[in-house]
Amino acid sequence: DANGNNIDADRIYESIVEGLNITKPNVVLMHDTNQKQTTADQLQRLIDYGKENGFSFEAIQKDAPQIHHTVNN
Image (cartoon, rainbow, N blue to C red; front, side, top):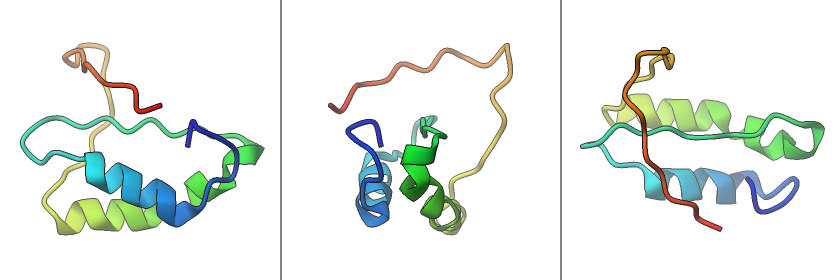
């Protein structure tokens, strides 16, 4: 959702799902502003997908290992 405001929710969902890797930790950054409503709109769908496909969800703790990421823009 970093590429613009109110990007189509399906596009955000597909982009996230395509980037997930079941063999590695995944951290998904989502912005929370009035201009990012479509991000929030797809969140439950993404959680459902994750649960149905073997992903787990955990809060990030201070002692969590550092996650390295790529920038997709």
